[in-house]
Length: 123
Image (tube, rainbow, N blue to C red; front, side):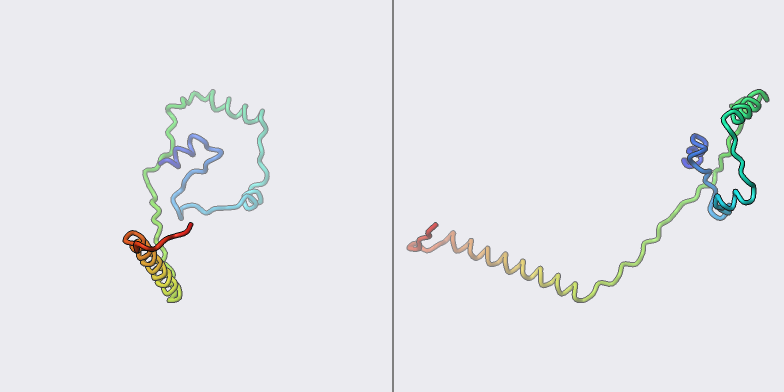
């Protein structure tokens, strides 16, 4: 319904949202070759608008072509590509190196807390 409202609010910018498969889309070249060139000037557009305004048809009486059909688009998830064994091995190696580094820093930290009494550190 929002796309229909956008078409009625801005008819030149937003095309009418037809249900998929009900309309055959044509290019501008196909349309112009079949019908020729039809361009109205500013004066012709004003005359056409005044002719329709004097017909006595009230704007409220005109019914807009709303359709109650709603088309829902569902995006199907694509299958993830299989990850290679090399990627898993690199991940395990990275985790193991981080674990070893953590253990070493914990051991160094534990050693400095309890520390030996006679050991001096120069800075």
